[in-house]
Structures are given as structure tokens and as C-alpha cells.
Length: 160
Image 1 (cartoon, rainbow, N blue to C red):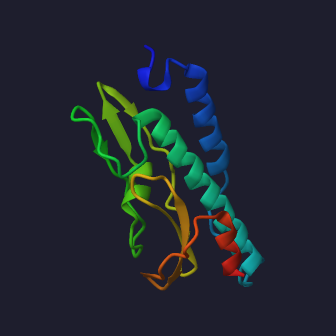
Image 2: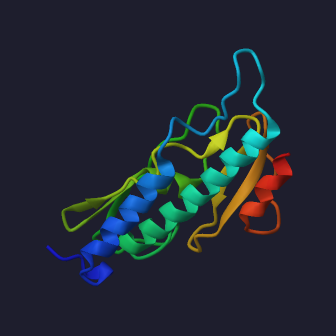
């Protein structure tokens, strides 16, 4: 059955899924260090950059399959089920949408993200509603420090 929102392009849909799979591979976002050692700041920057790109790719895949970015109203016949954030994290609703699924005419799409893009007490990747703009929010404990004014992966450098 052809997906009309993708213009019947199964290849495009497979390519998007492959891109998301490629960016979400690995064992998690928390940088690793030798036993007893603390992860380096450059490890946090790398984890932030990987998370940023993963969310960016997932948001584009969501848009291609659903017809708009997370935070955009769904057509009346579509239903959404959001994912869940780890305990102690102030969740971003758009990220939870990417971790969930959308059902349209008995076809389910998603999830677009497998895990919440954050490192405890360091950063959280967030997404603006309806626009798909990705940004970095530094965190302190369970509080989110307001986002930086630009929407760029370069903001991960502020974690050094």
C-alpha cells in the first residue's frame, strides 16, 4: 500500500528509517570512562552532538511520515501515543512525541527515537513545537537552564 504523504516513495521512507537507525545505534548517550574516572567534557560534547543530530533526523522522519513536526495538530482521524521520559527528567513534549507512535488509517508509524536525548545534570536536547528546531538545554540537577538563543549543534561546545 502506497503512503500518499510520501508521494508513494517507499525508497524515501526506507532511507529515513535507515538514517534514524544509523544515528541511534550504540549503547547509549552517557560517555564512558575508565573504571572510577569521570567522563571528560569532550565526551559530553560528543554525546550532545550525537543527540542533537539524532533528534534533528528523527524530527525530519516524523515530518515525512506524519505530515508535520511534533507539536503540529494531527488530522482528526490520527491518534498519537507519546513515549515516556526517564524518572527525574523534566520532559519535552515534542521529544516524547518522537518516542511515541502515530496511528493513521490503521497504519502505525514510530517511534522515531529509542531513548530520551540527555545526560543527567549536563544537558538535554529539546525541540520547538511545530517548527522542528532543535536546541540544547543545559541542566543542573533536575532543573533545565533556559536554552541558548540559537538553534545550532555548535551550542554543544558550551558544555566544555
